[in-house]
Length: 170
Image: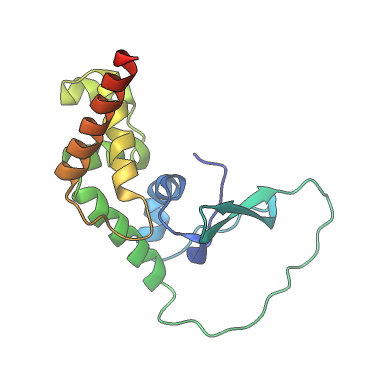
């Protein structure tokens, strides 16, 4: 399990956030959001990229506790809509990845070990781990990729081969 906690507004489909959602899938599928752990207090802003920021909760070192200050606001839609929308989007993105998306779901949602997945998929453990990372890379990001997963895989494979060829020539 990851040590992070994310609010619905913080989900921008980064790799760690996708893993976190997969780990909390059962709670989200019921239409509720996992409660914020009491040991997390405050928010740390980590700037990623040029145009966006990621807000990550950090563990509190203080023992001081006070009631959180909250402002009342209007929510758009029912309370269960946002969790369902998030898991539906992640499910769709991983479905586009085919077998590799199923490996991600089996490993991070159900907790199946990579060794067992390698036996079932008849691949090496390194290949299964590589496919999981590649599917997470395809599924992550603010929007869906404009290329198919097959094109994404072949492009990265070709660029990796070109990189290796240029290193060998030197």
